Length: 158
Image (cartoon, rainbow, N blue to C red):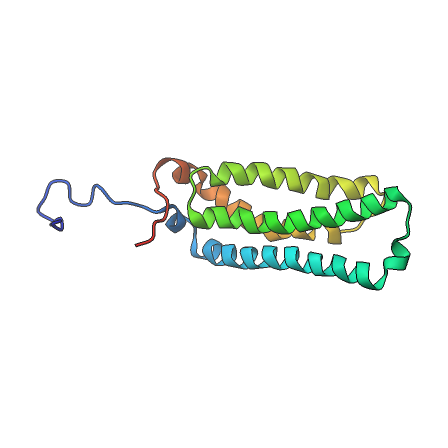
């Protein structure tokens, strides 16, 4: 295969832009931070549940409704850790549908985090902190969504 020269008519017209390169440098770095944080949250919540069950199994002699609520809440936090990993991972892999998928998944996991404290009648801000972890990725997605879906190609390994 010959290399194109500057004297050809189509020189420079066929430049391939990979989707990952559309992300600003800070977003690429933040993708790694968010992926590591998501995996860390998911793994640590599993260890935390195991710790509670081993050391405080007597205090879990709750009625069945309280046990179900306990496990649903921690399972949701585990899934939230996976979402915090998946959202930047799909951007990093350069999937065409990644941004639309990320908007849907982020909305499904963000709404309960925001709405549940309203119904609990307390003003805990700590339950909304995981949302702040995804905020920079949402900003980067909003800035590049049009180019991401129309002009770029997925990143490939050589």
